[in-house]
Length: 343
Image 1 (cartoon, rainbow, N blue to C red):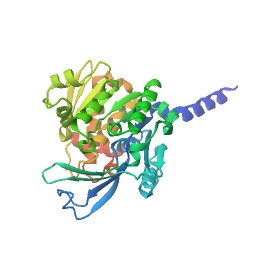
Image 2 (image 1 turned 90 degrees about the vertical axis):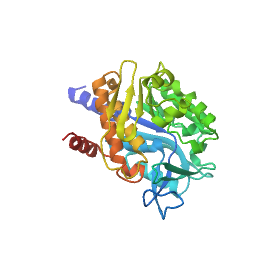
Image 3 (image 1 turned 30 degrees about the vertical axis):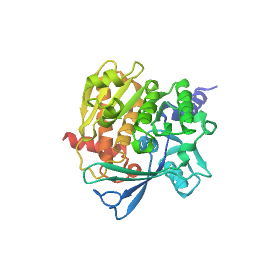
Image 4 (image 1 turned 135 degrees about the vertical axis):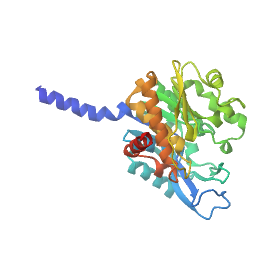
């Protein structure tokens, strides 16, 4: 075979397998968020709501794709107008939705979410049960999961069977295929039967993750009330031997990071906040997008700090708009913000 033929075949092979080189597969719930059209009100006071696609794992998948990365979503929605709309939104955002399934009996989940005047978020969920809770192991797209460079998930899919067993099976498939496992517990207490159940289930898969992102509130909750600002608390109670990176998000103040070799803090990027929904997911998508193209970040502190500053900027841009998926930033927007914050 001539040289041209060989290089042509190599090029073709790269195109065919290239997606899995940096593919981030996100597993879990996708739903409709209903967000008040005005800020600083309770759900009862809201005059009207704007619907927006949501669900943390789906937000992350869109976030990665918006940044120019390669992502896929695995989960279940209802075979209804909202479910079809969500599948279409993923497609429009260049997220591989071939791992989505549609339930003919259960509806797509709905969540009403607001940021009250006192700064607290208020949630009201409609999941009795919703389609995302009914994903079964036989419905998993195993080939898609095996292609993941990073397999990302939360804890909401651990609340009820059959989704809980399906979640564990998907993690096992990804781990066996050599994927990096990424975990953002994304605590939503109103969805759990009790605080004890939430703590037990969230921690039941803790030691399997390679990368974990948590918030200060989640540290307090998972440790039973310990100081979320203490490095000692994080390292003794939440860091585990298999963990490659633990990140604590601090909202507008940035984040802290812990690995076996080093720890530190990266400051936030200042913006005017409108709505905080999706900021943590945008942060995660920024970090995972960087990791998917360069896993050496996990052992190179300088590179990791740059990736975390980038992730902070992703989160910052998201709070300037309402609704998580519509607010996910592009690479240009993030670089522009970082440039202006340095000047």
